[in-house]
Length: 386
Ligand code: SF4
Image 1: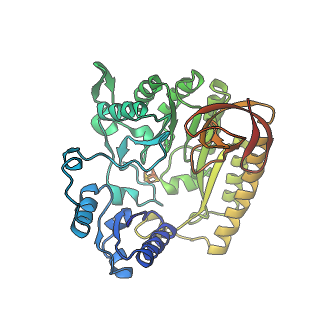
Image 2: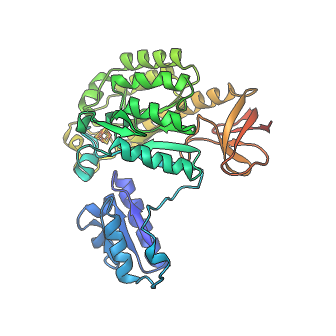
Image 3: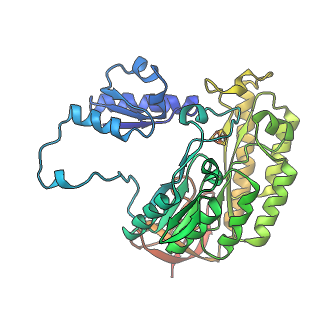
């Protein structure tokens, strides 16, 4: 068994270690990979019986360990086939990773220390992979990275070539090109740089789905400064208004941190007021987790655990009301959905695994369908296929 781990926050470390334990109990022969593998000694200390520990993106290391412990039977036919990437998603959607690492130094985050500075994949390579996926039947591409809007900064937006024409290594140009492939293109982890505004018209034009996953983290100017994050609540609200003017159907997903060190009750109230005003569609909130190595741990006045949790719960209760009201407004509308399995699909507002779904009768995975929405509950929509 190969266990892919995350080492981002303490809760993720614990979950990863638990998963390794379960795999060991279940199977006994375990290879560990992913971010936690890069943290020396953490895995070995708790689970000395694992066969090998590799780090993020070490496909080679994983394959070596697998071949060492489970030698491949010789097969003259299979041996001649060049190795392919492993796709873990269903046939009809796929993640398209455009870069690795991050140039920011948000004080609560240790990703740059685990994954390094931003390294963008060449635009030719990304577009080729996207084309291959679409040719293989993928209907939705989920663009991911640690910092999608920074794509190409490290290579000074170098010009590459796709289908014989020049193309800059830059988010807007990438979105425009992906928009030509005729499938859903959804953007994740979009750091709120000013040039994000450029992709909104592509959403209005139907080139990419009107969905933006843009982590704002907080609304108080002081807390954002302490986090080393950009912008102030007022500016963000203005931008959101602008995006909605250009693309009224846009779905905005974001994440926030409650109980950041030093956060006062009034700063938290600012965050709630922002949330009320912003009326975001999908929101995640984490209680601040003092992950080892994060600069924010050294800040004064840490918020007690119970207060952090209580603030997170208040935040989520407010957002649950906002999200539910937004879903109610979809009743009576007809939505195009991509079917994940018979009876369950997702509209352009729903990313797989993290957002809600649309329930209806029938259908086949990978097909698109029009569904008339008849009712909404707190997270999901229910309707009839037209
Ligand atoms: S932009 Fe994201 S990945 Fe980069 S340091 Fe900040 S939180 Fe971490």
